[in-house]
Image (cartoon, rainbow, N blue to C red; front, side, top):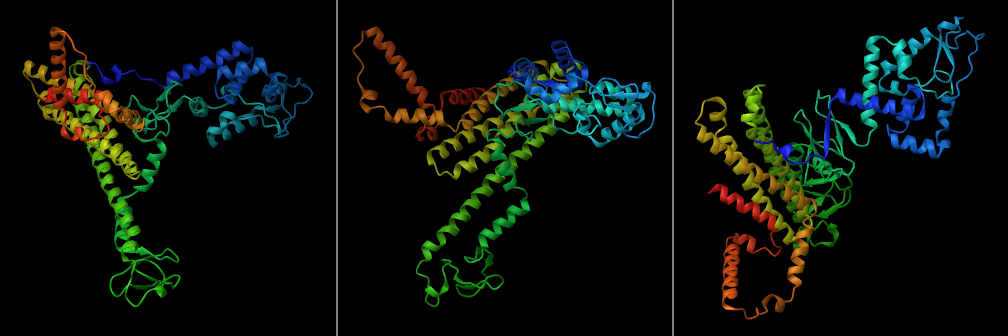
Length: 524
């Protein structure tokens, strides 16, 4: 079976270090030939323009004044054969032992070696190293490093040089997985919140380089991570919210374990207030609060919000655990298949299914974050619609997961009947395709805030009742029979929809119902 990643058009390319090095050398050679400059000057211009050939050519041809910091590189100082004194060590050196950048400031080779060695040991800043002459901005290029640095230092320098090429590109990013040396080049027209999968099997968000978090954006994902930073913090916040109240004077959390409703903040401001309404105690009679019902509104609301958060957090954690299990299952299958190409051809559909399970578990996991923030908006119709679609997504991924887990061991480890294997493969491939289509359409709808479907619902409700109930014109008998046949067919199709969907005010998108119908046919 053809891999799902190959079926879907990818808007990015995975680059190895060798391929990145080739692209970098091509950029340098193009600038050298276009502007007739040295390799050192070409590297300087590319770094200062974020390795953009278009920017260099446009600014060079149209606005030469913008390149004034580089003019000194094009007009080096004339050689001074009489001046053989190094301006660093002040030793008298022969003309053959003096070296300089394109600017022409001469220094002895020993000082140059030490200067380059220290700069490389300091880190990536050595890529933008400039002339030691005070006030001179002439760059030290790869040519001078090649002639003076040791083999070890040259290797480190070119690694920094390669990394600067990727990091300066707006459409390139290193894979954040540990010990991965690949980079991802994405198309410029792709949105920032885009999930990419490296060849090392690590999936991450292109924009923030964190784990994939569709359908929520990077800002919402970061807020959620901070909000749910540790289970201990959540349990502590739950207890504080349930059993304490904040002092209206200083905000200190106070626990009431016995006694009357008169509270005194003894550890901070000393204010006296009512435990029920949090108003000053002086406006109350001895133990009676006439605003008991209103006073608990804020406390009750906060408790409900926290309870709601914990419920969505549990769904988030549960799907995270299931996703990790799917990742381990994928690794187990890959280990058992070994490195033989024939095994990958035979069981490619199984690898594709497990990869799809991991991706769908990630989407379902972060849909709970979407649901939590949606619940704070109190839009009942949209919340009900979202929960229905989320439930369908859970059913779909569970079916695929059960089908993939059921017969993995039997088919991977042992000999098997060919007819049974062909049937298993057909069923799993179909389930994988249907699950992928459903999740893609569902997540895309969530990213659009279900606005398209809400708009369809509004137009449906705004349509006049007379237009929906007007009589059909009289037709000949043959056409009437055909019309009645189509009408009965449409009625029977609508009657197959779940009752929960018929109760929703917002119509279920047709493409989602097609996917659900396919699932039912597969299950039968």
